Image (cartoon, rainbow, N blue to C red; front, top):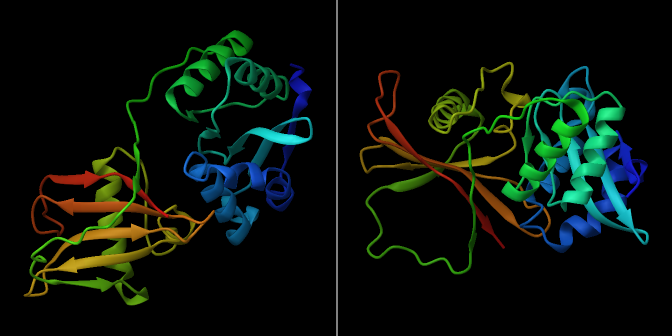
Length: 246
């Protein structure tokens, strides 16, 4: 496979025209590609700093069969790739002089690309001890009886509390993120709708974030429940992963 078979573009609309049908054909598998493409489209590439986002796709017989996105200084995100596809992409990016702080992909794709990147650049890959699972919700079964308390949708007036909860979640799952009122809009947490669960006396005990519908599905992320009552002196906490609702 020729390295130049990969098509790269900084135009997210161009990328979605070329690869959108492929990504939406299996939206659960391509949830990260769809999510970040939509964020770039709605926020504008300039909101991501001086280095503009780059998207890429590989076509076979005029149809997209593999994609990637790169959002400096964030990781390179890959759709599932064969070892041959991973090698051709690594060769192409290395030839263009790209430096990659990290990659995000399914295990086999990440392994194949890391090995290819080492062959083409001499860089020694290191495994990042962060693994994510994606769960698909088939049928929602409400608990019986319902827990005491109520859910409350968080609004702009709750920004400080929302940032606190998201910051605690980020620490619990090993994300390095700094959030304040000025930088909030540039984080991955800003475009979600949050629901807070409160006990009958109004004490907040859990939070869930819901992404906008993309590709006919809604991604529930974050889901976070601290082990103790939240606050500046809170102790240990627990965190849950991601759920796809269709």
